[in-house]
Image 1 (cartoon, rainbow, N blue to C red):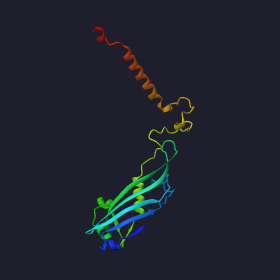
Image 2 (spheres, rainbow, N blue to C red):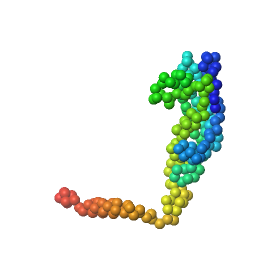
Image 3 (cartoon, rainbow, N blue to C red):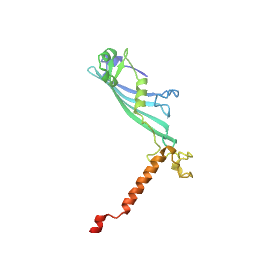
Image 4 (cartoon, helix red, strand yellow):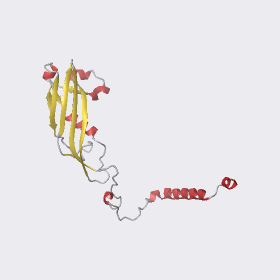
Length: 194
């Protein structure tokens, strides 16, 4: 989506209302993006304003989208709606040249009077989404032996076998526990004197 800001930049009006839907294109082959494991059920709904106050131009947008993702523990579908806000200062390409690199993330650049938003809003969506989704906070996940969804009830697996590499640690913990029990069972001589 490219917004025509030429009239706003010329001072013909102070506020430009913004309202549009953006279809999020997903590249399932690019696993460096956080959007590969999420299905978007609706386009990204964008609404807000771009305001020119004596040459200082500010973009304030509210965005929302419906999604379906996999629960990070049990792999069941999790559906919901996600909303976030994006605020940026709008500058011309010439103004952006003079900005320091630490401020560049706060800006969006107008080129030839047009503001391209697709890449910016897709990136903001990717950065705003949670790192992982859960069907519920106390999701029990899958049994690591048989793969049964433990939210549906316990599985029939026998006691978990300990990784052979962890056996020395298990023996050490058993010894420490036995020593603690021995100390707790031994009467304290000071208690006998009282």
